[in-house]
Image (cartoon, rainbow, N blue to C red):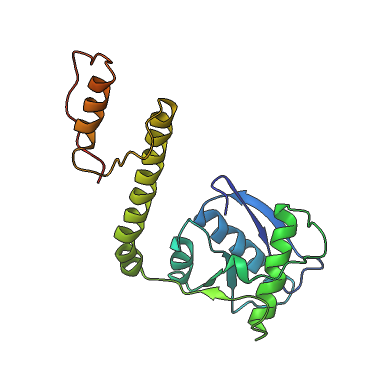
Length: 196
């Protein structure tokens, strides 16, 4: 799901061809489009009693699925890795082709053919909030590792190898190394807390 535009494909009874529409990336626009297609199907003599929507699960979370369920629309998030992709040759990658592939997989899943794809469980807002501290910790640990690796690379340029930045007295040891090498310290040198 893009943050700017969404490409929506549908299978609507009474339509000669499958509609494909690009809309602004917001839920009310999606709801308005689905209502328009429902009205057009009714004009063609086909009453729509059930609307089912699926999209690829991504970092956006499950807010859209919860929003649609609150409006009596079935919403599902497809596991991206569960959709079978041909491995025979490189596949073209466009929004239109991806949308068609997801729609075929979703229709197969709705028919009960479970091998087409698998769905992610839609967590409640409380369940998603409960996962946040662990995810934030993982992000911080990754950021810490990235910073430590950058500092080690800088130290390696000056011939300082196998220096453990996680030690409590790492800042003091760096100052001691500079003094031992005869490198003058700047006037504003202050002790810095080590990375834990």
